[in-house]
Length: 114
Image (cartoon, rainbow, N blue to C red):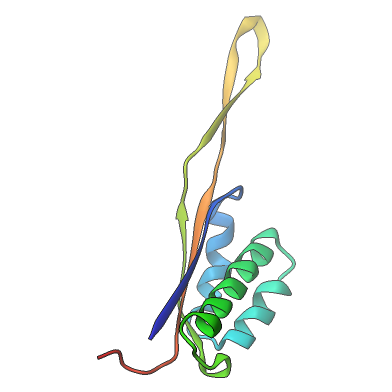
């Protein structure tokens, strides 16, 4: 059985979060949680928070044993851009693009869904 959790519109560049999400695939949830929270980057805290939400969903909604769960997928997709402008010389302006991302984590208990 699979359980998911999603964090949307996170104010972080997706390229900075993807390497951490890539490391977590295939790990047990305890190991993945330690890895995410101890990496020392902003992305680790946000991915850890989403992972905790997925664990709570599995425990409370699907009644799965937490110690058997593994991270099947950890996906970081691009979200919408916030466009801001910065004043430049001679009355011109330069565009600043503030990136956002969506973090999705899928947990599985290893069993087959029939």
